[in-house]
Length: 463
Ligand code: BES
Ligand code: ZN
Ligand code: ZN
Image (spheres, rainbow, N blue to C red):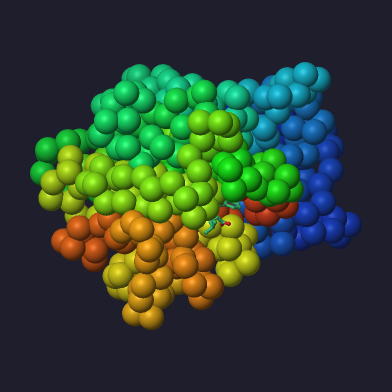
């Protein structure tokens, strides 16, 4: 679908359907709409940011349902400069539908959306300025939709090899350098990462993406958990908790979406994305409870539960990252790490863990502006006291005493693999709940949300 901003009155734009948002109407109830003489009248309660997004989400779903029009047009009437994002989010994120696996899914007729530069409220901005704002929001939302597609795609289509190739293909015409390391490399260099997929015929892959390397910009490193399917391994998950575990690659895909968006917006920032793809399977070769495995630096982990695989993968990725990349300004990891985060904070937010309270609060504050929510889950010193103490190895992979706080404890495990100089630069972002939702909300349907891309862009504006 193509969105074009046109510097002409709406009546001069050729299209069979014009969307008209109306605030006052005798008969129309909130959110209702009707078509009359090539015009779709939509009742809008007010022109606040989220009302615009919500109303346009409903409108687009309606248009796609009747599936009759090749193009539609809308003017900027009532939509101020600050609300352009609300408009584009409604049009693009609201109309997203994941139909790739439906044999009978209808092909959408809608190809073009025209936005007319008419009745625009903010006269202080030129057509070019408004156009560039619209275009930037289109870039962001298209990348969110691409990330949603990747996360939603099922495990047999997104094995570590297949998803790495897909990522490489998407980045072909960008400035991003893409290096894919194979299982032989991983076995030698990141042995703990290798071990968690020993039970799978689908071999792991490490993808290292670089943008603006050594150009003197701020340097952000993003690390992502990409478990393409999580059965739990020998500590097998119950069926009800297993069937949607294709979502377990959301961390890695989110950071792919972030780096691609930053490339497409040409932002002046050096960014590295380290993606670890692996499948946690069960077989006679799988890693087992009781095994002791070694990380890249030689630290040993006693496996007490093979379902706590994400933190092991991250441990090696952290050691790899800190060996390979110097002078890091920020180091953020994104992972669907703990089921307990949903019980703790619900499906609408990500859990934020780390040593730097100021940094966490900054992330929380800037993200609210783009309607993405994070909850600070604070460390306190008691959590650290011997909670991963193994009787035979350096660490266990799950806490040995039941002190609760599973999401915080996930962060505390990873912290063991972080160098001192990076402690204050680190955020652990647990997106287990918000990256893939079970009931539709805002401009999201069941499935992947693409959460996290908008908020980091907002964060980057402040550094
Ligand atoms: N991938 C899961 C976490 C998860 C659960 C993500 C539900 C999304 C929805 C992760 O690998 C896992 O299984 N974690 C365990 C950790 C526990 C054994 C310490 C969990 O949350 O139960
Ligand atoms: Zn697991
Ligand atoms: Zn997992």
